[in-house]
Image (cartoon, rainbow, N blue to C red):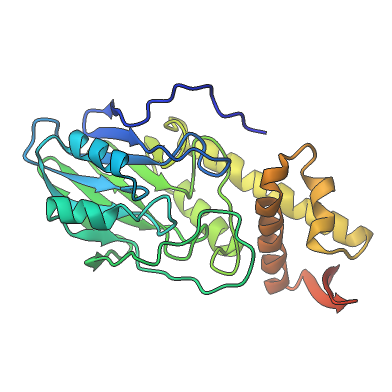
Length: 296
């Protein structure tokens, strides 16, 4: 299990992570966000303009910290990787303060009665422009290109900084934990395909929304793909032993799991099972009012 580092964390401070990138940590630590959501300001430090990636939660102190990191530059774009509440709610107030358009992922309001384990979706998100795969924004000395990476959410984008070969990965690939894939919007098949898509790229470094920079990105992605395949193999082995409900997988697959993360683990197993069902390798049936999964 990943351990959150001891405080103090650099919450509210503008950290220089590379010549074109500053990082500001939001004050929203949790078992799902690590030390908090990281907002990135992209642009030349003494240049006339910049972009803001994942403005974060609508927290007044965080908004002021991001404004300070912008340092008087014109904000050409407020860019959101996806619309979980720890990523996009500050877009609207930041746009009001700076006059910048909100661009990036498509809006998404998920209507679901399923239990939620990750951050809920942001129903207020209203982009001025949605970026398709390969579209981007350009400023003085910087270019950000959208890379479509559905899976964690159906609307998830990464942003590639062409000048330094850095990729802002949002929650798709993180520096501290694997991403949670939660149906019905999260899709394990899409997530795996998006990981394979990143494997085909040649990015130098990943800057994720949570955790440290990833300086060996392809090595990490290769390990993430192997991890998911291992989980799939575990599920198939357990199904071969006996049919079971989703909760019955957790003690075998996640030994020593923090009880607060059990709902996330159950949703991850569900995502794998749905993917296996689509591929004709698992099926579900009702037994005494409960959904039970079987080997196909």
